[in-house]
Length: 332
Image (cartoon, rainbow, N blue to C red):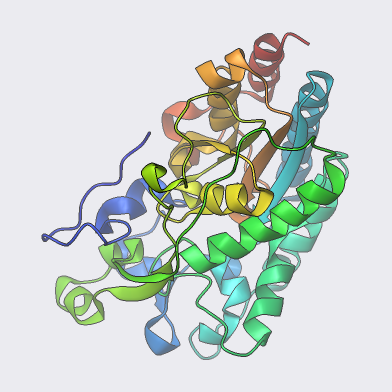
């Protein structure tokens, strides 16, 4: 499993993730530091390019076609795919953007276009943004994304997992679980040092400091909470650093489903294509194919083809190579 580097000064183990995650863990920012960030209200930081992200329709068509081929092959191999898309932070917290900064018209319509294209693959597509906006509108809403980090908070991960679990229960037709799922304890306060602080001058970084959020941690195995054996689960979650165990998505999904959930995750430049291939060629998948695979995607990447070396670095590949490697791994 990929590890996040430590913050620049000693902190307790209860700190969720380190400062130096930004360069590898989240969608890349390709400007100079002074131009990389927007300083919003209430201590919020946003990637400067995000409100003007736009949409490549050619890229979206190519990506959805590749995902559709993957969904079809996995279905033939007996694995039902559920797709989940995390929206842009600036979409959910647009009221925290700086004054006069708005999402461009193309960026505004980006997620809806992406969801339409993904639904064309035939796989169930879970609209996490709808659940997030509904929760934000309710009383006492928790923080669903960190103020100074590219990622969702543990509360956001838990809501996304619960939304996905409801769809799996409704549509997957899984048999009764033979083993229990993860059991999570009550919420505790943790400190988190956001990855976007890497791009802030040191003096301002110290002033902004840590954020405090709630997180529910798995109950230790000796208390009956976590699984003690390594038998592959019949549900697996695959995705980027949004699925880092410290955010708790897979554990929350396991608790909501009442059954084990395996996890394959990698930092962002690995890309969704390489990460899926790592899952299907991994030991657990070879030992026992899951009945359900949750493929978690980012809105940022819905029009980004696997050939993009500026984002995927050493993990670039052609679409044809991705399809060939996946077909070979699945034997379909």
